[in-house]
Length: 284
Image (cartoon, rainbow, N blue to C red; front, side):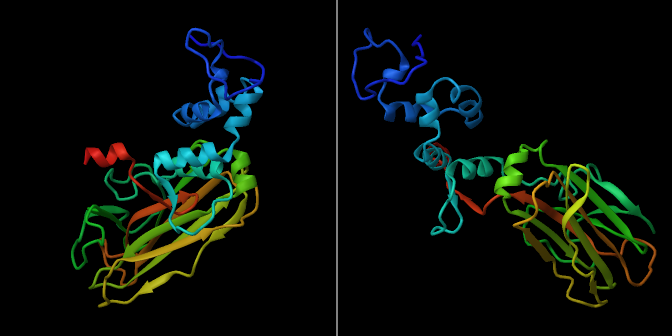
């Protein structure tokens, strides 16, 4: 097994036969960079970077993190958009996913806190439902539906538990994008509402998105509508995100005639287009 020198290699471009190579640090820098690009990012920072000054300097190079992004297929959605920090960009891309659990009711009401469960209470139905429309994305098969008195449900996201460390949220403050979909029945009017809060470690509200409630009239188009909002330049100290939505019908009919909601999402980080890696393209 090749040893690791605790000092910087004097001439990293030197070539040696395998039999005379003393340490891995005697490999050319471009070979070391290629090896580092194959390792998991957290291993690089936690275990490789502290080894020696040579490894530290190579792991801090912009070219390494740009290479890792290219290897994983991470590219900005807007092609001309410059990337200010490829290391941060890589971590945000690798972490990016929907932080809402059970967004499309596939697990019933699991993962959701029922803040208000009035009238005939929350219910899950199959799309398109009575007097409804198919959801624009055919993969969404179910939705949550409210009743004749207010029904609200929420989720609380712990950002550190999801991998977003404090310094990242305070210094970089990546965009936080929230989306939700709602619709009415054709035969009944309803009222939809949403409130998303950025909270501190002590659950103090640092920023919020709470637009006026949307009232949909009876005999309307019953189309699915998307609401979205991007938090940017928010105060430091954000540690949790609270997402709440719901509503009620406006006819006060027994049953489930209030707004339908589904496909909710919270994502953190830049808009990214993930280009398939060569191995993935070959497997298709």
